[in-house]
Amino acid sequence: MTVDEEQCCCSGQCVLAAPDLFDQREEDGIAVVLVAEPTADRYEEARTAARHCPSNAISVHERD
Ligand code: SF4
Image 1 (cartoon, rainbow, N blue to C red):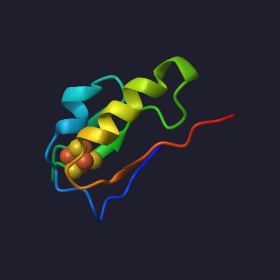
Image 2 (cartoon, rainbow, N blue to C red):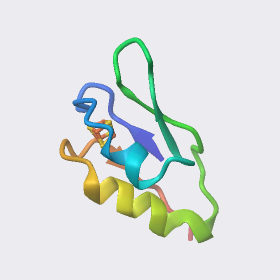
Image 3 (cartoon, rainbow, N blue to C red):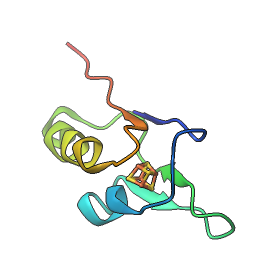
Image 4 (cartoon, rainbow, N blue to C red):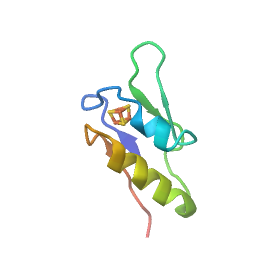
């Protein structure tokens, strides 16, 4: 899972949707991925965060 820092507008929606998977940098509010490779049982949480992102900055890479 990745966040495109150029796209991120610091809305914080990902942190609200999935606080265990995302945080925001204190200095500029850009999102930080806490769990780069979430386990399969957390894909839904990751996908929900991605759907809530107004900038479409979150990419979830699910393993087969
Ligand atoms: S929801 Fe998207 S735009 Fe908002 S902080 Fe997270 S990655 Fe950035």
